[in-house]
Image 1: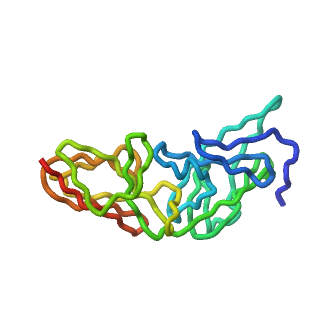
Image 2 (image 1 turned 135 degrees about the vertical axis):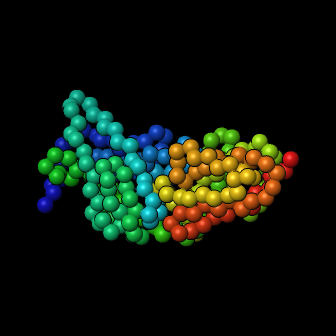
Length: 217
């Protein structure tokens, strides 16, 4: 049986400006590694649910005063809800399970709850000039030749935005708009190439989202 390690320096699992979720034993704080555009991730931390089938990276840093911090590892208390690959959480099935924070000798130093939810819909969001996502796109949009916009495919359960990186596929008429992959599977930069109409489709987890685009001269 793992034992609680009681006399440890304060440990912090943090990521950028993302909000932290305190461990039940008060020894750790866990935050997701949020894309700059994901305001929900930055504000809610891992208190928001992860989408089943999505991956959520967590960036780990350790702070201590006057002593060396021990090496940490992470264990899922229920792999049917989520699994852990070094510092990435993989949503496996709806539910809640504890993320155990352990150190040498499999000693549990802290734990916190991780929620996983089934995505019910996918929505396309536009990244605004501030670098944060705006509200859901309307069903149809117009663009001028040469215009560009960055779209983010976001999983939702009802009105709630879910967390996690998605392996998404994107499709549109390449003669009308160009889709640029900038290194994030759930996001594309869309450039209006020539006058015409096309349906832009993004799909992840077997769920699609669409927007009708018209490029005008």
